[in-house]
Image (tube, rainbow, N blue to C red; front, side, top):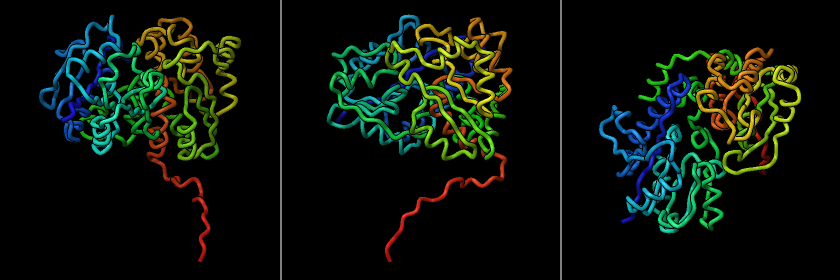
Length: 377
């Protein structure tokens, strides 16, 4: 019998309002994910976190494993240590906050994959892993795995490990990484049960999100999406919303792999300054969804989560970095609604936005004609 387990890595965040919102949301999703993994047929599930006493479970006992001190945490070494300690043949891995929209059938397929004979890996996103299933897990023990999970696909593929990817959808791409992910999940119909109850309790106001969503259902409007977006995601998005769309896609794989290239839009922002940048943007569209991270500097120079999340929520007094504060203030005062976020904003969030924008509107949902296929009598 193959020894297969679920490993959910849950990292603590800081004490700022944005960080607490993200961490509480991730925990609500984690508890529900444990329940659904059990229902899908996985007996052994472990939540890997440095402070288990901090996270009581409303659904009964959860098996915890200590991940070690957050300051010295290395994903690859922790992952290998657990494979060795638990003597695992297969792993179903999740970073907490991912997998929120997977059904029990989806989870059962991941579990079945991990029980396979041949060494191989199945990713939600090969280019930036949030969750995956791995069979032949002992084959990972001699490898030099990355310090974060994002580039795991690249590492395994480079070592000769066969790698596969799930089709892109809301279920496979949505992940809670930033406050805006939580707010879009709240506005969607994608959750139920305790996760929905938690989201109903969230009382966070956002100055532009609802206006940006309304624009998506306006056939006369133009929405611009900027950032690390897959063309597959954009294709789905533009087919589901009423407005016209434009996209500026740059810096894909920013965290999964280093690049010496400086994104063109970052150069424009640095040359023009944030006020002129958003003035130009405001004259080119009626709303904008902006993955701010590639615009504001390399991943290894990003400010702490409390600053990034305060920017996403437009809490100017909490944005400690002057560069980020000037950018955030210019976005707040733009003539159009601007939504700021991280990679999730132009990935899983777009699937949710394309659904949430239709709430309360009577506009016909069918926006595009059916493909014509002539049949012979």
